[in-house]
Length: 230
Image: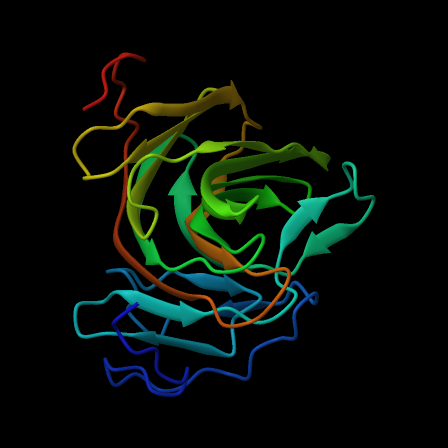
């Protein structure tokens, strides 16, 4: 990415630095109420990265720590809850979308959107480097994780993700331009009175993935027909 990532103590907006970040794997949460990020002040870090900043437009820039990941049990047998996730409050039914820009170099480098109820119930979706190329990836976790991937034909360095949750149903969409939104996944999802939703980034095999997150919108569910891609 061309945009420099600054130290987490160098928030361009001028807000005060937050407490020291938790080590990967601790699943610690940090409130960011003193800092406007992506146009909101209700963000809460799960595993705050050592380096992140907010630019003058309110975009979030972050650099991943080593051994950061979200996964539960399936195939590998381990549990990882150490990925970087900035969660914002969403109601029982909502649509959220987000623009993601980054460069993926190593196996399992990933960035996108996450919706989370708790450590056993969540979904993450976005670009993930696998088998030598950028893949469109989603992991839905209901006690245990699944994993679905497919080649992404757009520019993986700049894409949008959209998620709609309503009445126990999750709809994931992707966009190359923020205008046309083909379906990625339709699946059952836990019903809750509220959710946390926002950007995530992980690098299980290394540190140093630079990601810019912008254009976050959390609204009432769009209610569009399944084959309406607008």
